[in-house]
Amino acid sequence: MSITAAKLTGIVKDRRFIAALFVIVIAIAFYFDLPSYFSFEGLRENEASLRSFASENLLLSVATYIVVYIVVVTFSLPGALWLTLGGGLVFGPLWGGLYAVSGATLGAICLFLLARYIIGDSLRTRYGPKLATFEAGFRKNAVYFMLSLRLLPVFPFFLVNLAAALLGVRWSVFALTTFFGIMPGTFVFASIGNGISVALRDGETPNLSLASRPEILLPLIGLGLLTLLPALFGKKLGLKSTSDEAGDP
Image (cartoon, rainbow, N blue to C red; front, top):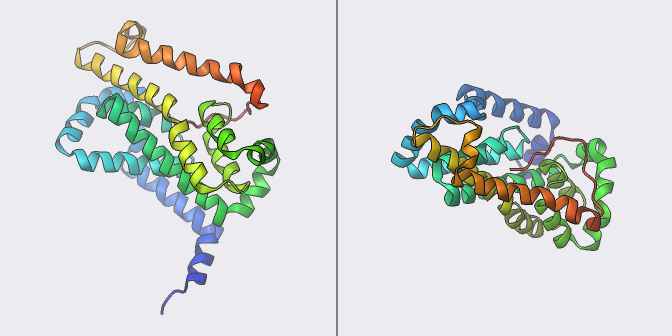
């Protein structure tokens, strides 16, 4: 018996399907013990094995890393920060940052499409009041506003994804502004991850003294400059941070 497009769409839109998919993702994550890597201790203890595996299986490692990042962002799971640090630790600041940006962007696009075409109605019910914060900005200049929201981490990453989808932002605008907008912060964290890796390979125990190393100090300075952006430009954009935990990559 063939399944028509209409039936398939109905299945996907069923909340039970979404819930089951979410449970499956969580089960797979715990089966492969992925949460153990989403911490400083996890990165420190597995740094050597992760780098060794990546050097011997580069394509598989890159593909797995990007797919895991996509899943984490699509389902708004915790751990994106540690994934970014891990990318820098395993692949270096340049490629690790690029892989993280790619995974985060693709995951954001997946969530964007889910919100727009599949679970939009239930999301409007839940997040309707918060969406009003973004509506005027998107209507005035979607490109500038989206890029600003990505550069200025004053709202949770997932909330910006949902707002853009439910308020009619074109997916091409969403994808491009996400890709380029998250680059600065992502490369900073990837560089910090690389600095931690360099310190571990030099036989140093990770502690506050590592902040004096150039591999970590310079990215930390960059991170400090990024944190000043909301204070400098937030009032111009009329943005106020929510009380939710930020979910930036």
